[in-house]
Image 1: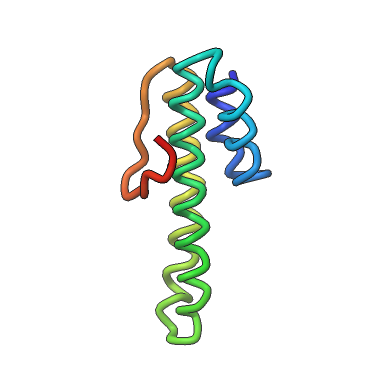
Image 2: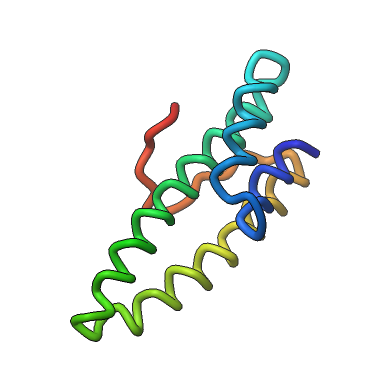
Length: 100
């Protein structure tokens, strides 16, 4: 359940929820730790992409890029939550690995 919540936190508490889940559950469940770390890495990457896209709005490309980042983040978050619900590992594409 915690692994699924870490991924679905993209809709609320995006950076805080996976961090809290990672810190609280990392020693209790390797499965939850892996999913929480993956979700945290993805949310940090999305935050960076969102800031860059917002800045690029002034050059017009951000108008197209920002919705792609937002919608892509939501879709990938749901796919990861479904994989966690099936007890399968999941790796987000194009994610910078800050937390291992």
